[in-house]
Length: 206
Image (cartoon, rainbow, N blue to C red; front, side, top):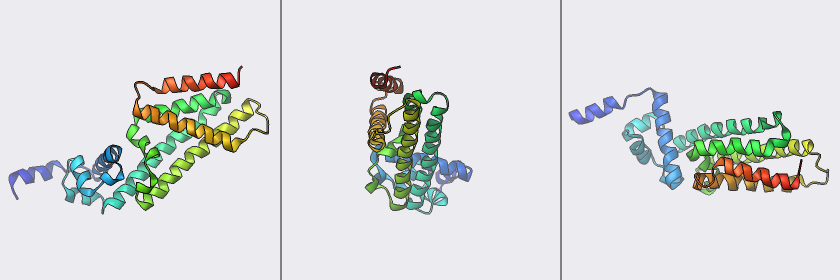
C-alpha cells in the first residue's frame, strides 16, 4: 500500500454514525442535482469524500442507502408537519398563514430535503417510494385537519365541500413550496404568506 493511500484511509476514519450521515448528505445532494438516477455507491462515495469500500462499510448497497435516506428525511418533514399542525393552538383563524409560514421556512432552510416532495415517484426505488408517498399523503392529512379547525373557527356553513377545499389548499402549498425552492429571493416565505393572508381577508373579512 502506498503512503498516499495509507494516509487517505487513516483520514477517513470517523465514528460510524457520523460517516453514515455524511454519506446520506452526499446522496441527498445528488438527488437534488440529478434525481435518484444520479445515486450510485460510487457517486455517493466520491461526493462524500471517501472510497467505495468505506461507503460499503456503512451500507450494503444503493437500495439500503436510499431507504435510510428517505427514512431520515421523512422524519425531518414529519416534525415540521407536526409543528405546522400546532399553529391552531394560538389562533385558529390565523392557521392557514401561520402553518404555511412554518412549512415554507423549513423549505427555505433545507431545500434539498423538501425537493423530495416533488421528485417523480416512479423514479424512486420501490421501498423508499412507498415511504415517500406516505410522507406526501401525511401533508394532505395535516391540511385537512387544519382546514377543519379553520372552518370551525370562522363559522363556515356545513355545505362547504371540504374535500375540494383541501385539494385546493394542497395545490397552494405545493405551488408556494416550489416557488421558494426555485427562486427564494423573489418568493421568500414572508411574501407567500402575506399573499395568502390578503386573499383570505377578501373572502373572510374580520
